[in-house]
Image 1 (cartoon, rainbow, N blue to C red):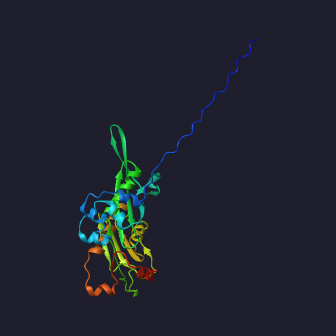
Image 2: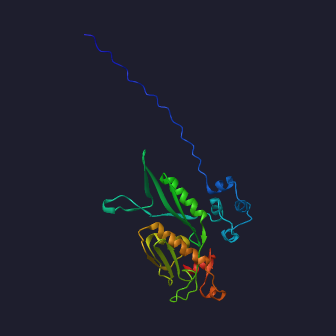
Length: 266
């Protein structure tokens, strides 16, 4: 019998694949490559405006997020739990993305929305809402809008139980409303902490408020309305006019605090 011809094993040629070169841009390089398109952006890039207080006092709208990146570097950001995962009888756990979908002839078209908060934990905070077909663009859009909605927070010591005269809380009680939800903030004595709803604590901590009492009324399961009501309440802190004789008694300070005052609060 003829012996079967043994086939030689196929030789596999392994060609080393070159690693892809990914260019990671730092904040400084981003700002160097930034070409402002607005008058306010050009003034910030040329160092004619050097603080966020000057930007807000100018009354001009912030239309470029690089303005905030340049004036307030190293800010923290977080996402608010506005969505809920699918679960039996509506018992799904909370999540940062809220998913909705539209019925079409081609099928279901889902969209994801999220709420971002960004701040320096020292008197500046911003809230932004983003919606897109995917989660990553929705998050980036929310962070970008939060930078454009940056506001200056007024802090103080308005609690009758405390006489420290340091801006650790808020100077007076404020209310904010969105749809059926009402959020009320009240000054608290030093050492109380943030006695608020879990998602509101994220925003208050980013703003630099350390002690506060809060109360939420209405349909509080809608976290988007709760956050919008808090945004309206924080806006009243900076828009409410105070008599000059009350500024020192309530230790009212707007925006960032000097380093010496921060040490006293700690």
